[in-house]
Length: 371
Image 1 (tube, rainbow, N blue to C red):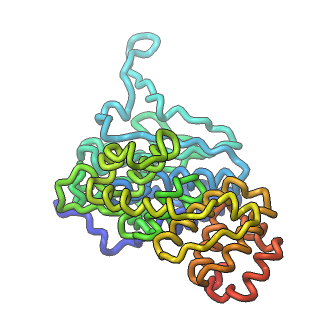
Image 2: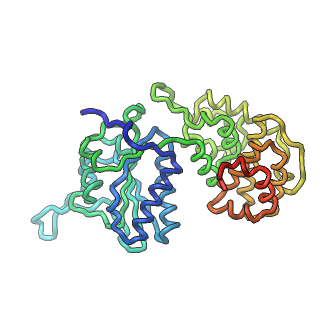
Image 3: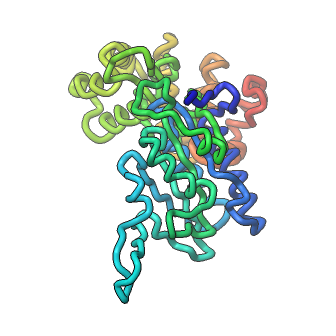
């Protein structure tokens, strides 16, 4: 059996993927059309690129734009065998026939105000016998004798066989039942997500300075620890909730992204000692502006995180914009773009700030139509 080729399918970054799929689902739902109008989706990509996170974001978008509650059921097919998908056999009431008890993961809310997402994660890691059992789920929306509700979206995801992860070649019959999309780990898309989700300022600043370190997955390498969006989120959690001192948790960080990247991260992060007080900037003071490029990236990350934590205090945001106007135009533009990512519709709030309007008049051309 030949491998499934990815060269003839679209490659979308996470942000574009969320926009296109959630937009399609919302159109179908809001127009009262059957959800099965859209075929089941298969997301391909290397480990840690953000496939699972994208599905959760799609659920949020559907919930926000349809007014319906969205429930995500995460089914790891790697943990199932074909019988598990059908359920446990038991005798009927008069002991004459076998009936199958529905697996708990397929017990879904069928009410009109709910949308279910059945997320078949790591489907490519499941043996072909289990993948074959997924035929009915993806096309006919049935599991043995059990029928999935009409309000159920089906999305599958898995690693490619070339990723050196646990992955089996997908049978062509199953592949033909799915809409295939390859997930591309775009830094811009990740950064927008990172700002909205409270990723630590040091992680944000370092990856803004060295974007190639966001995704260091190499299928030809036998390294166990390597940088991906997933492992950087784990590093961020360590810094946010365990200890913000990289030196004190360096071994833990190295165990997530690998020693080479961890050394770079630790060395670069020393630049934070050179930064002015972020609080002073938002209080309206004008401390000296760093001149080094790496320090400016760190400053932008710290200001963005601080702005996100004080997003409703527009007078303090205005003070920071006044300070940013002293930066080189390309750096102040990066900061303004990052501010727009703080939450949906935040750029409309920025447009109400006189300092932002003034900045637009003098440097808005650098935004390339972002506003």
